[in-house]
Length: 146
Image (tube, rainbow, N blue to C red; front, side):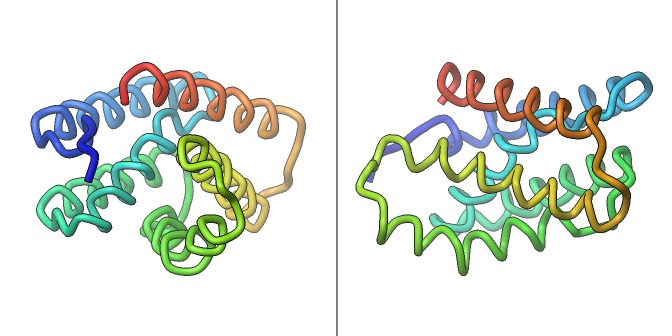
């Protein structure tokens, strides 16, 4: 079993606090849900390795992000759980890129977020740009930090 930064509770708590503060500040000017892909990967690792206390704090961070961005409460948590149970095992069986799977998981999460946003409001060019920007930021940060 390989260990990464998501196994370190201090790093995880720092990431959660940083993500909540960043989303609270950026929600004033932008339509962003920054670092949600990283939080999804932390959710995935904590659920896989049964770090339940850390998982609780990730759900709380998801709630703050959902409230700031105007999504329904627990929608990102339910999306993450749905992806973990149904979609990601299919990706693991069909894809043989073990190093690229984490990046594909982040992209699948943001496609789910785009679907959730499309249910609550119309998709426009600004929303599409925000999702693409969030994907790029999260992929770069995931590659650097983890």
